[in-house]
Length: 471
Image (cartoon, rainbow, N blue to C red; front, side, top):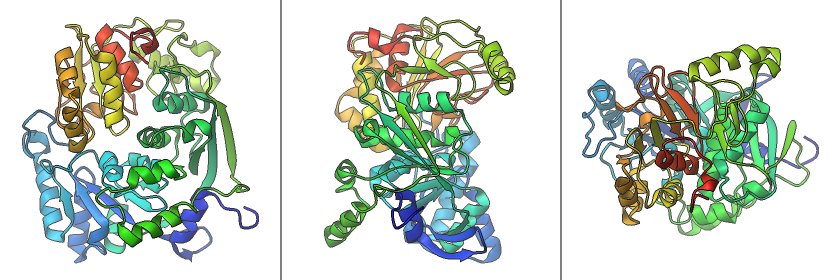
């Protein structure tokens, strides 16, 4: 990078380096450490063996989100297979003084939903959690990434991490989205065009007029799926939309600190002449709703396109495409429209926020789910659930035949007892469609909340733009 012009990532990096350790390793200060029950237990055990305590409990927050049942009236022990892990999380947080957003806490929810919602995620901050989709908080201009259990233990003990400096990539989405096209379609299209490995080793900044026009919850969706093309983190520069979103949230700065923070956040966007190691530009003016056909997020097409023929693919993709078609029970040249579904799932850290539920409810209102379809709505947080209920969205879903659940990770990865039976076909707002992701031999198609809602009431995959009110 030449001169003093720096990117958003460079500015965050420079302000968090404690010291350089050798030629390519740096000690980085961590502003916020988020924990959940699925990956933190061994880290707490490690602290205990070494006689250590957390360096900064005020910077550390725990939540129970992966394992609990989402059935109405659930408790921490409702789902027996998760009982031990949840009880261990409760005991560890009590012992070490870590604030826990437990199953029945009114602030509980999926960690990547509640972190922005509560103001735990802030522009310019470093955020880590034992979950790859921590990148979600990059939608607020944070550098956020997932870490492993050993790293969780180290951050608990030191409030710092050793990191190699990633390269930088800027992905600019140009144009204006047409009705019926959403953030999920943007990111799926990008992954389909460039594959699942292009982001390896990069910190990715999303830019362009299409990104600037997105509300915050849609930006969180974009950054959430950075992981699906190999990046560990994705960021969107903060702007006035960001500042308005954060203002007044429980853990946001207050009074004079708020004014200081806002002044700092306004200096974070990449400088005009900042250089990136790679630049990618996409015109999304004519983008259509996207739907995956295979077992990778890159197996994606527009709703009116035919499934590609593996024989036309480059050699190293051919076998994977053939295997994916076999697993999904599909053939080259087929159209996705009209494909019968068995399950429809609206939830996960990708698309379970209030705006996602509002879009889906608008499409579903006045319709009924066919008898052969099982449809779930799992709000991303208890707060989202309360807001949706206050707006009457729960009645829309229930009247249509959806199950209205408590917040949690749920059917994203067969958690809390929620799964798709073998051989059945699901359309889902989640971020991954790997073999068995939603259940052994389950077949998953990724799409936006609008597309999932449209398919749920049609009983088959359909272009949401063709339904009354379906944009």
